Image (tube, rainbow, N blue to C red; front, side):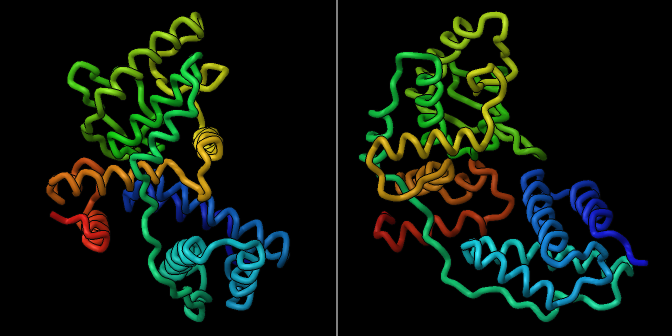
Length: 291
């Protein structure tokens, strides 16, 4: 009898995190996509053993994703994770034939990063009420994401001791490494206002180890962050979806347009290789913004 797929997924994720030293966000994505595949096998195929998975079942999973209107980029990511998973199983002699060898990825043009104009940022600013602690929190979120280029995960992991308002510096942590980034004078002003309001509002529940909190005083979740950005975008009259990453893309293009070197931008954004930063220079050239 071959290994249960749950066991192999557990071992694969452990190897990815502890042996291959993959980033925390990467491992989270792997865990989520593999869990979805396992549920599909359980619900649709009634199969739970790694050695019994066939290429036909993998094609069935692909059709399942298409029927549920999963975008091609996400499908390709899931297939890439499955390739690594089955290579792991083959290497460890858990299977004798790799069913992924007969599965191809979708081919598609790379999507252009979503960039916010200054006018759009100002529209978002205008619809955020500053009359309570949550409004000040949300205004700080916009100012910080827009001026520092950090990710949503990095922002939500911040504590007060990671901020240096005097220097307008922030030490961010992505799950594996940390780095110093900078933020605007506006972000500094809203940070100070928000912290004071948070102290007054939560009193004994106030926690300096979590900057961005929800109504209960605990850490704001990534899902809640995305929902509040969706809500403000709708109020501001946006006809497209935006995300926390829209601010990161905007920051990168803005910095390059104003003369920052690609190598320095790479360090500020926490990219491991320059290849991750190069598309922003390409985008700047395509938009005719290169000086």
